[in-house]
Image (cartoon, rainbow, N blue to C red; front, side):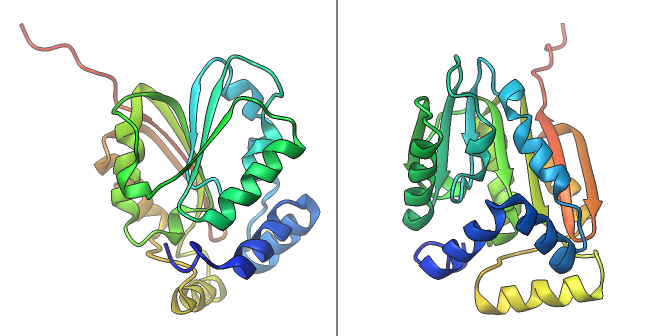
Length: 221
């Protein structure tokens, strides 16, 4: 996952920008040609999505999604990341928001330490493009979703423009980004993971995606 596992400066710079909505929206427009207001609205709406469910946030980063969670409720939430730096920041965010139903785990996304079909919702915000093998990561996310469970996320993708594609290449050379596909490739990865009801909507170089794990089909009689 690039240099995120131990890179304190990278983590702090990223968190500083994304946690401040006004700065994040400016950065999203300048760097990726995208309106990140949609991302912040999605985070703000999590309180209705998580209600009563078991939720996995991978990679959780510094815990940006925690700002959208209700302080009390029947949901359970697992924030998972490979980076101990990010997990420390996410824990601090949980304390700041006084959230009590959050668990934390350090693990690799391509080997999630959870049984098959246990989560109702999986969130993956701005992490997929950092993975060396996004299809394998999505397959693992799909595996731990229950049939009918939902995946929601955002990712940087190629094809948003020459300037954005150059920026992606520079981040790859620095070790910050891993494999970055196009929006069309992202949709194919989601389908290959066994997901359906797939939606991939690209805004500039940012893709907003959602899908569900295919429900079990009745056997033929």
